Length: 501
Ligand code: DHB
Image: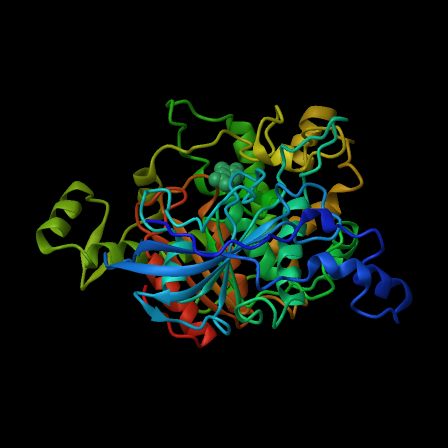
């Protein structure tokens, strides 16, 4: 049941400024006052909300009555390109099961709902995105019932095209928008409810990739021109923690990674992919993995010679172990009988990489999986520009199409870096990155290579960050099997106890 008790005027999008915003002015002169007139549209109005009461079911199955204030921010930038996407909603719990809560210093879950690198809008939402895809309570709903502030940002996406045929949501628009949303929150420190030094980003798939990128690239000057163009608030964009489910990331290496992982697996149709293409891409992965200089305790430097064993022992066997340990004795016995490739001994599951690949079965994508020869993939569109809907973004696919001397368009190397968290974690890693990471992936997710999330987690662990990474056994793309644990984890890393999980 929804109840509206307060309806006040919402901040108007019409308040878009006509003078330069503080960030641009400061960059130009170094002396301009921070609160230039242009920032007025970016001042959060704490009195402009509706109050609603909803019922949310926590992960133990208990229903809670949650009363919250729902704020609609018409745009988080001063010079929006499209407020349908560049807007955000804030939900702030005020009472849970009739007991008042004070969320003024609570962690802030910044939950993006981006999928497929598509545009994502919250402009028409009249309340928090409380229900998940399975009809249960969403991550946002759980966070609200835990007493946290929930921010739901929209962002431009790859398919947006204006009347002149110009694509205005291709790379790096989505990450620029998410950063602008963070800047809006930090600019409104003290005005906006919640602790803006405890922003926890979350997302799934493309949204997981962008959440990881937001975590890795905090305060990076590489985005400054893009942020200035849209009038982002004059504040930092670093986040405290990053939750990333099945991140579809490291895109320019994802074709090679995919063939390294799934190259021997058939398509669902039973057809096999072009063996020459698969082998060519797979061979590239050796150089790429070597270039990462990833190290892991007990394995030394990771290479394509030990990466399979490392994945198996670090993520896949522990995943099966967790799954089997949670089953009843008869259910476990039945699973083991049905899956003889798996050995269960002394409470641990073991199996070979080859048998695991056979167990997963069909690969979802053809080769190349991301930079498709026919430009049909989401990623080719993501790297479109101007009136060009889609482009090749790897030399391999470009040269397949345009010959051996073809070069990537001059803007692409920078755009690839702007979209890839690994770039921000390489060499002298970004010191402003998030230091707390929650990384999850299903072991049957063939949307990308299983090594993509593992490499991210391994790099972060090597940097000394607090990394909670786990794979869900036999789970497919987009799965979240431990949502309550994520809510508890937010409380733990932020030092704020969850009411419910
Ligand atoms: C998503 C899935 C993909 O396979 C992909 O290539 C890009 C995005 C997604 O679900 O968001």
